[in-house]
Image 1 (cartoon, one colour):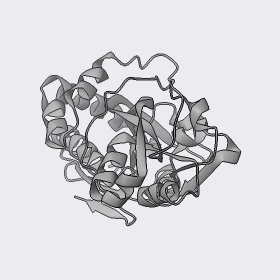
Image 2 (cartoon, rainbow, N blue to C red):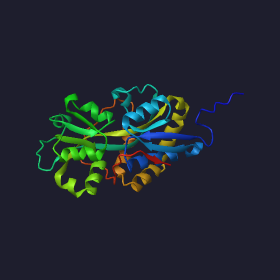
Image 3 (cartoon, one colour):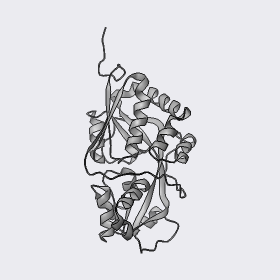
Image 4 (tube, rainbow, N blue to C red):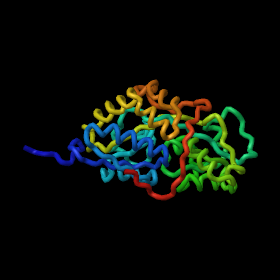
Amino acid sequence: MMILTSLPTLAGEKLVFATHTPPPLSLYLHELIQEALKPYSIKVQTIQIPGNRVISQVNSGRIDGDLSRVINFKEISDIDSSNYLLVNEPLVLTEIVMITLANKNIDQPITWTTVNQGSVAFLRGSKTVRKHLNPENRIAVSSNTNVLKMVANKRVNSAIMFSSVANSLLDQSPELRSKLMIHKPAVDSFHLFTYLNKKHAELIPKLELSLKQLKNNGFMENTAKKYQITTENIESLSTVNLESKFMPTKRGDTTHKLNCRDSDNNQLIH
């Protein structure tokens, strides 16, 4: 009898996920995936590394999964992601906002056309943001803190960032808060999904089923509250149409308030 020890369905197996998403959103996602895999006795370890490195490591199979990407990630990625398989169950709705100097007037409504009126700083590895920015406007930066500093120092016209991350960083820095403004409503909103390397294909339907159950039994909502993600974002997950061609949708001011902190270093979550 042949025993395929490489398959992650054996008791005591550990899967390693990578993400470029900062805490506490990454902590929420980690806890959700860990709970979803608990029935199969699979432990989860999450490491935070730059976005492009996440893709190369997961696609090569050196890391088992990518914790947070949009549903059309493979279509917009300029890095080989052919070995990525979607776990087709949304985990959270997140919003992207435009940040400028506090005294800058911006015409409403705010759209990607508005953002593209000048140079834009954004976190390197953010494929969805990159897709919407004109090549001549893209300024990819290594950390969210430096993204904001570039706006404050007038090195770029604006910045694009997760609303939760931007609010948290400005709360931590009164100096930046006094210089910068987060414009409302959000430029875009979209759901985040988990991906696995294709070697774990047989695990995907099990993980999807577990995530549905966690949504139905309240675990997802309670965990969201633990990390201060609003209930509205969880409830919206049940209405997303996963069969249609994904396009980010413009939303009003329904920002989930996360006490995020920026990190320039790799982080390991057990």
